[in-house]
Length: 529
Picture 1 (cartoon, rainbow, N blue to C red):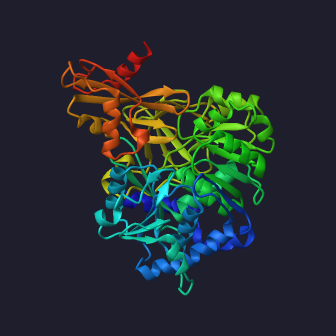
Picture 2: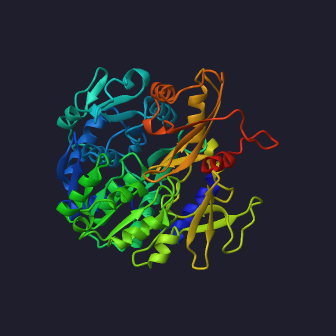
């Protein structure tokens, strides 16, 4: 991968997608133009209204305090933060002194976070004390991660350092270190076919290419857009919409740290939002409101991605005066295809969009041979916004020898070069835009004494796109696990709540191939009947 990566990097330089500018260079320049742009947080517990410039200056000072604590360029700073202003301040601090930013989904449980912290060799972790009743203060990260400094927004528990106290000790009496545009800047952990999340590495250049693609495809008016974002800071979509797009495109940004469709519509109206986007269930819940049209008078577009998007969802949005479109990507390759500003409804509702600037796709059969136009094949992608690999190099078999990313999805390219996703090879469940490893669910449930074997599959859901269903072969048919016992077992396991199965089925045996592999498609088909 390393040799291939060097070749690809040079290619993106030659084609003009990469430059010597780091994101810090861009931000230092743009903050002079866009520093007065609003940064608003809608939250039940930590609401705020500030500006991009104020967060930038707070971050520059916080960086001085982090240097005094012993952090140095290249160290990993994990941030398990909701979409709060403090997350943006923490990001700017890391950017100024060359720390690698590691956002973590704020609802992840102790088990997932411990794995991520250990695998990434994180030197620091920033969390809230509490978010909407979810206590982080009792997780005792300081004791379990001996070589890591734990920084807490709010009252700091034993062994942790107060974020607010660090800000008071902050200063700018330091020389920002030299950075390179090909340095790793952000690491996002994503669930895939493995039980443990995989660390995806993005550089200044790959993320800059992603942002330029986005601004171009949505026809942005630089310095004039107002974005309402329901996307969590810990997700790659949140890094893009909450952090980078405002700084590159001069956008007001209104971040929501939890989903409330009524509040979202109020934010649209109050701030005269021009853009929004996220997982399909966000848009779906908005469309049921009687206040929709009045609240969305200024809304220019709503992009949908992160899970399968129904054709009818985009059509219903259109009927209500909302220009919406489907988009396809992943943490590894954030924007592969997307609807384009001005596209006809047919393209936006029936396909997952055009190839974005610099992106190339290959659709291949089981033997790796390219299929003809209009035929289904596994999607291989490559482009300047693609990641540079994984933290654990053993995971790099997700890339071909010549650098193409094996998405694990099946699709069809039509004669207009628009992609439509038709199936999935990867064993994951996408609930509300979040990847859930079926293997992880199976391993957790398999540890229960009443379960002999468990198999997890995705089932359709109107609200979240998909949800988790488990088929269980009981250890004792006379005393099967109850749904209440299942729920308590997952709660005690320490993994994120959204990974808890929402449907339980029993089976005496599983349909299998001759090699003994469970045929999950047959289980999904059995649910239809």
